[in-house]
Each structure stands twice: as C-alpha cells, then as structure tokens.
Image (cartoon, rainbow, N blue to C red; front, top):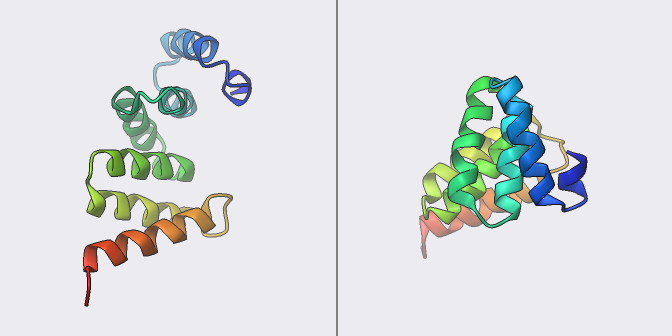
Length: 115
C-alpha cells in the first residue's frame, strides 16, 4: 500500500505479486494489485484482481468503485452503474461516496438519454 501511495508502481507490483504467492486469497492483496495496474493504465490486468478481491470480500466497498471505472472503460454503463450503487450501499458516507453519487447521476442521465 505504501509503494502505491508513493506511486512506486513497479515496486508495488513486485511486492504484491510476492505477497499473493504467500497468500493467494488475500482480498486486500488483489485489490492493491488491481489499483497498481489501474494506476499504470493497465485496466485489463486490473480487472481479474479487482473481481477476485470482490469475490473474496463482497463487503469491500472501494473495490466496487474500481470495478465501476473498469466497466466504464469497457463501455458497459449498466454494469458500472451497478458497481457505483453497490459502493454507496456498502459505504454511503465513505470517502468515495460523493464521487460515486455523481457517477450514478451521470450514468443514469446518459442511459435515460434526452427526454
């Protein structure tokens, strides 16, 4: 986590991959690796780790925002909407709540189109 926060993504990737060899079912490890790949612009590599983190710990709210962003990259607005809404159910007052609420509104507006 520290290496990610310091934007030392190469070191973070190496450390996280080593950690996941020791504890392959670490939701936090998969989430942090997904964040590393996302920061590097490698969303296709981030996706399986984000999905694994969500499956291992379904109540991990922040991974839902990452999955929502990945869904937007995939141009899957309905799936992204669902992920942002799930985040808001899990952590309605969390640090990503305001941004998630804005994304929900933006996606809903886009899906509903001009009235």
